[in-house]
Image 1: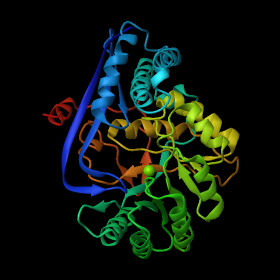
Image 2 (image 1 turned 180 degrees about the vertical axis):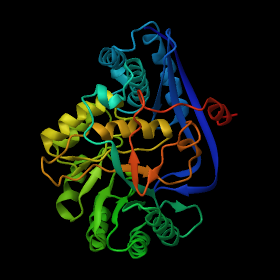
Image 3 (image 1 turned 90 degrees about the horizontal axis):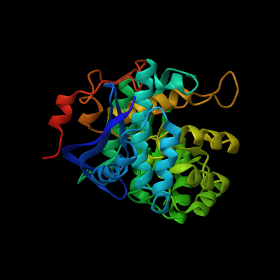
Image 4 (image 1 turned 90 degrees about the vertical axis):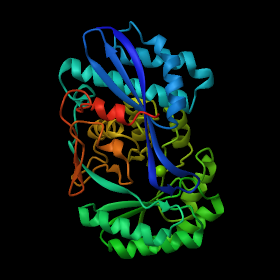
Length: 376
Ligand SMILES: [Mg+2]
């Protein structure tokens, strides 16, 4: 089996209601998929986290290293591409593009052997994943507390028993939103907050101290991800567990963060960290440092499917009867790519999402939908 083509696919959808994280405004959903085809007709799909156009350009520049190769040499291909690009690529778009390639190669491998990817990666610990609902962004021009509390109450009504809202819009506004959401979801629903690094250390410590009374499961990306010593300080000086990792790409970046004790909870994204291969290597680092892993998931049905395969192989930790299951991050913001680009959408049932058990990623791409969402 030999690789014959590597094709980036761009997806674009303008949003009727733009929404904001602490630092960016989402006016459209824009994602980059990669399709790798082989001479025997097998096709694999992957997804790259981050700016779609630049990921596509990086993918094109990597494709020469894939044409004619045996797609089952996944580790070797990963390292050869990384070695070629490492001088400019220890973090960022080299890793996100390589992630898409790696996921597509695992999809091909699973289809070749007729098993889900998790089977090739040592077998599943679980095939049903309790999810948490991600949302609660601030609508552009809207009131955050009002919109987030209504949105999260609706998630709880759908069956979710854990939710995460965005913060980072100012201390007073954030505390008002957290209070409103806690009241709306009741005391038994887990609540997490994500600042998308919208604070500095002093404000992050203050908001952590003041938000703790609302029983917060974790405080995600309080400050910029480069500021590892600030993460240490925030962990030490406020009571909420600190989570981060969606922009720590590759084993070396993650290892540095873990060595410095930056987080209680590590959040690698398989579409950014270097694919399923690198995500699995990072599990070993998390194990050695005794840090909980709750992966980050953001994107289309391909990212969701790849994330689910990764959740399946997360080892039970700690080794106890009542060890908690890792939760799936299930984005509830409007994104037609989450459902429409696959023939069988991945959905939750009462807050639980089943890992697709078909070969590879376990999904089939709807090419008509891909064409319909291609940017004009
Ligand atoms: Mg986040």
